[in-house]
Image (tube, rainbow, N blue to C red; front, side, top):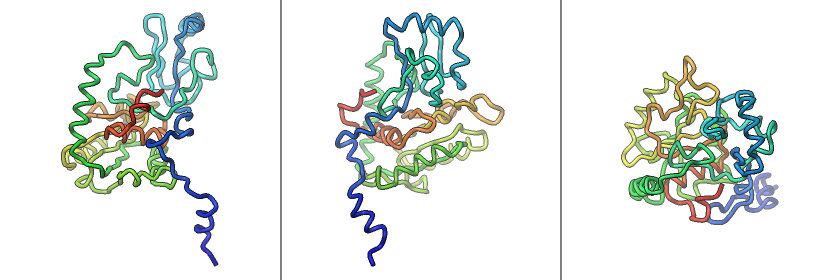
Length: 270
């Protein structure tokens, strides 16, 4: 009698995504982050929101009032959608899981005028480091005080749909064998020293990725008695992946962005 998994495989066929080699509709349309509409038609609505206050729209303080306008910090956003429900003419979901950025400041949208020279230098420096890693890299994942949701998404990278092994990406339990440090969680005081020891034990060159709102800013738990404002307060970060939690595609985008493997046509997609 055939094994059930063999019959299931014949029935389902190949389920593994071809992204980033080919476009993936789910990756491109996933509502991963919130965006702010700054068109002229929404100006009166934005002014009205500023007059009534933004605190009631965002439990994590991700909405920023600057120069009589509104900006959103995706590094603090927990993706609850409260602002989208309350003001759909101003806030909406950005359909793409390509959300990772190389600097913390680029997570604040709409972005101010950027120094392209500085960004190009950051890309070049990171590319020079990861160029020595080759096509096979190993990741050491450290939970520095998460709520567990990010861990489910990280684990999903190993399932048949995403299958990061096809890209030469593997997870390892030993920091001495790792090239990438993937950090989730707020970075509690009790995890600060173990996280720094893990980083020190990794052979150079090392890439550090902060995955999830908690790791980036502390999220809902920021500035608490037993938390920090994200792991960037004591650890140098190379790639920031927003989301609470970030989807497997967003995590994969962050890893491939760090390794310089994102096709040109997907780098600017938002």
